[in-house]
Image (spheres, rainbow, N blue to C red):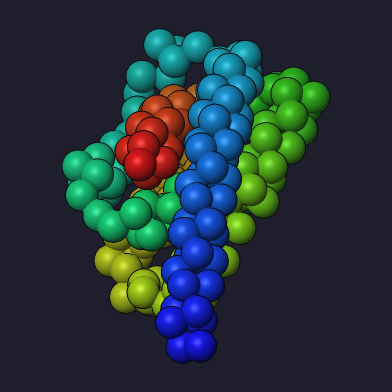
Length: 187
């Protein structure tokens, strides 16, 4: 009787991990497509960088994310946090940009969609209890990075050039997100 229960539990674990693997494959495909859509939308926003050379700024993107040396669980959280911060960033004062509001709304939709889809993976991680996000230095560094961007925008009074500089950095963020998505879901 006990052996029968062990076999049932083993089968359940096998099927659930297979289902989760298939689910992550679909999630990877969806995330990659949405990240590409966000990059395309950002490129459609007008703004010529060479007029804004005097406003250039290095916001010091966290090195550990560039090096991509962290656990899968933390990487999923980093992706979600980056998407969330980008979403909130573009909810700020865009009035001086002259950007097409329809493109901005599509960007919001893509970012929201990506965050919603990642939440199932985040819930799985929370249920497993293997990872405590409060202790994540990477997450702290990431939040500080986006805070520097917000402070820059405020200092520049949300000028068109400041937003053009930020848009360039966020485009680079989407390249990092694309790479992280590939690394996380490659298994």
